[in-house]
Image 1 (spheres, rainbow, N blue to C red):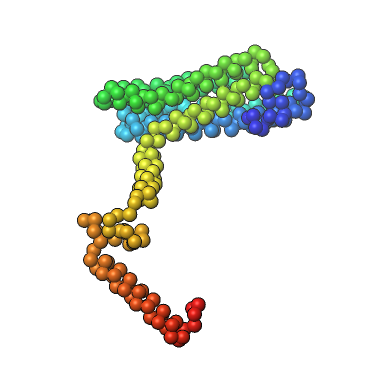
Image 2: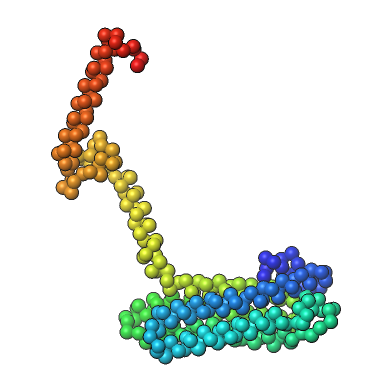
Length: 284
């Protein structure tokens, strides 16, 4: 929300900006809140589907828990988005209170959204950790895998801070100042959720793509810095690649090179003789 509201009072006290600035700020804040719901919904669904593929390949209890959480996530964020869209009728009343119309009590919507969002973040954190510690694997491996998924703890902290900032917004009423703090914690929550979604697949991505590229670059660097071989002196890199498995150049390649050098020397001598006889002008 900050990039679209920085010039219209974001971070300033509401009494330090004009009514026109506040109207633009309120309209853009409402649009940002509408888009927040589908973004968070898709990210959390991605995390749930990833957990299903890792820990619930068959229709076990874990599978049905993930299905239930996915359904609740879709319903919750769909309700949040509809609430933001229909917050006031007509919608212009959201950013222009002087317009006749009716509005829903936004205080209850803001608080309930923050609470449910925080609870869902903790459920997404506990769900994989509980399953990991039930697996038959060494204790050290459990700690390593748990550390990857425990990065979601930062997202839970962001949710708690967002909840506290939302309570301050309700009690304070200084929308342009307090809503900026709420949006900062929302951005941090979205970022941490994306990171948590990507971390479990990073090792596989590294082994499949990055490791091969790094290995190729290292081999090229070694080949470019390596000195000439015993039998490769005088040969181009392409010719040196013809060295056999025993480290020696095959005889037919050596014979071809000797024939080429003899022919080159013979042509050079004939050229010098023709120049001395005057058949070919000097300088050719």
